[in-house]
Amino acid sequence: MKALLVLLVGLFPLLLSAQNYEAYDKTNYYEITSPAFVRENLEGSLPILVDKGSKFTLIGKQGDDFLILFWEWQDDNFKAAKLNYTSINLQDSKEKIDRSIENRRVFVLKANDMKERAIPYFNKGAWNWAGGFVLLPVKIRNGPTRTYSKDLSLGFSGGGKVRISGYNPTYLNLLVNVGISSVSLDSLSTKGKIRQPADAAALTTALGVVLETHAFQFGLFVGTDRLSANDFRRSAWEYNRKPWISLGLGYQILSKEDRSKAKSEGTNKSSP
Image 1 (cartoon, rainbow, N blue to C red):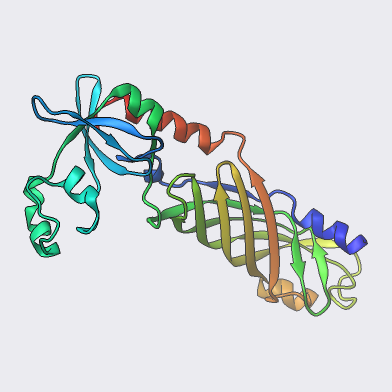
Image 2: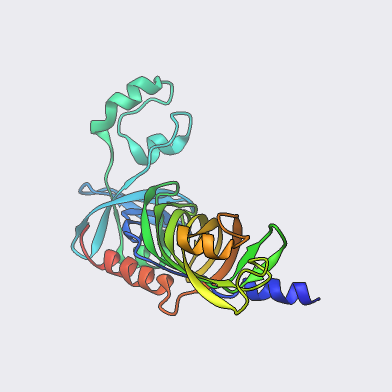
């Protein structure tokens, strides 16, 4: 039970103040969430009912309404002739359809339908840079004996992040961390060389994976702490350069979900 309690303490918040370059918060891609009527951007055109799940690109505005371009489907799908191209024969080869790109059809979506029947769709799988400061409050050291250390580590993390959801602000961060830790030296960890408990500075390097969704974060870091040559000779610290694991949970007070919503609303109200 004691070990479990200590492990739960090890899950105490990981602070990832990442300065992510939020190109992910902007998009011209949308998806229809319930059937909606559109009309081709031609005089005298009749309304066409578009199915739920149809995706489109926002390309401009016409008054308060929106000019959209539906995504391309395979040539064996009736939507390809219905919403993508003019003068297309479904028996034509894909190469011929690809060459007919100049015949793409532009449609008008009413502003009210854009607001109530469409949601932003983001580029899932897109990579970008991520960076920020990471605070690791607890480390689990496995050798030479297992300990749960409260050595505090503060460092800068940098790497890449990939969006893993087309609808929600969910990302996977792959990070390299370099920082300084305050490590505890005592008689047990130094085999009696240090009689009075003391703290020493150590260089920390680590690799981490952080799952980030909305304002919630869960991270796993694996790294080592390295004392200076003089401190190591003086203490013979047993955990020098030995791997540790740090887990953490985090929650941002200023939620990215709120900021993303505000930016999406701004996108809907202005020209792309």
